[in-house]
Length: 287
Image: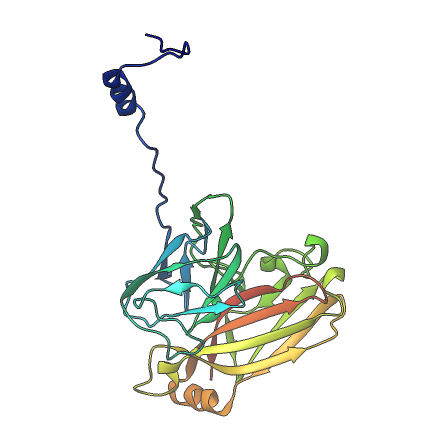
């Protein structure tokens, strides 16, 4: 019916019925989960699975370490400090690590939040992208298991992001499997190999780090890894760059005692501009 000014008036009962069929709309986003894992058959093959996730501002990511291997989370120059629950060991050294833990971190500002394991560092890295669009995703990357072709051991997973360089060009002359030559079995107290540098990598630097399990260096050591050799070459020229990285005294002693020493060689090529490329290979030295 109509009121005095010709306005259409609805009965109260009909208005209530209308309210029932128009419920409030609620939205929620499930927190992506990132887990610390170890690839079987790969020496030191620790990684985050998946290594990336995307959440909206204020969103949360669940981090878990279900293993008996210590892991922790170190944030590398984030846009803002994430707020993590007590279950996540956060810090900048190996003391900020634990076995069998789980917790969540929330992200207050948009941007890219790069994180490393406090024990395994850049070899176990990942990125949380915080967007302002409300999008929440996680990406699972199924890397193939490590294989050995000829004298070069091909890694089953990358230790950092995809190969990049200035203007998207790689500092490597070819793919990592062809540009990096490193025998998986060597004799002596030095690790020898070579890297093919492209024009995009000319002028940059090459760093080779040798990592060994602490348990193989001394009895009773924790199941972590220690650096036992390092070489840095700067002002690289395009073409083949050979390197030889000697073991330190502690590692040489372990090699003499055990007659063999399993290593992980981390090769980082940093161009003058653009992102670095990191390649990790397994090597066994024989006395």
